Amino acid sequence: MAKRTKRTGKKVSRINDVSPEVAARLAELAGEMRQLVYGENGVPEWGTKFTQIESEGMNVGLELARLFMEQSVDKQADRVPDSALECDGKAAMKTKETKTAVLETNAGEVVWEQPRTRLAESQRAFSPSGEGVGDQH
Image (cartoon, rainbow, N blue to C red; front, side, top):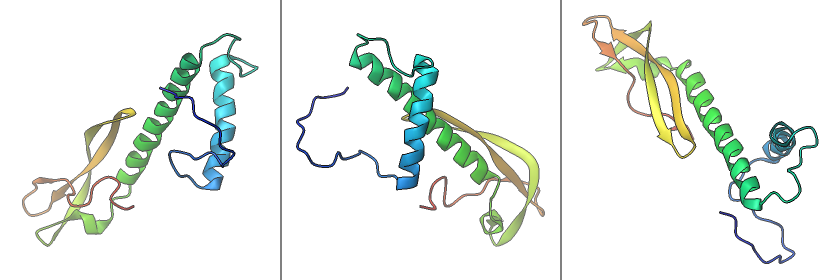
């Protein structure tokens, strides 16, 4: 919930750091979202409580975060490097099979298709292990 703070004249700090380019695009996107939520003027009706505005903003933000994560891991799963497809020194072969992965996050459920592979010798299913989602950063 929002809390009233004392203005100090200092630059307003943000909870999360993003690049200036991302911040600029998010500012544009926020204006577009206000129009979708509040209509053409992009302004809530006079008298709308701040808690309602906060709730609507958080819902939009959390859905954006959830979609960002879901799209990121979905696209990452399409680009599994060959080095991640090794098991006991043997390379696994990619198949057309996938396994649905589901992860509960603070923004909601994130779902994507994880690629499946097979080891040629045993034909047993193999899912890449080791570094997982997001270990690149």
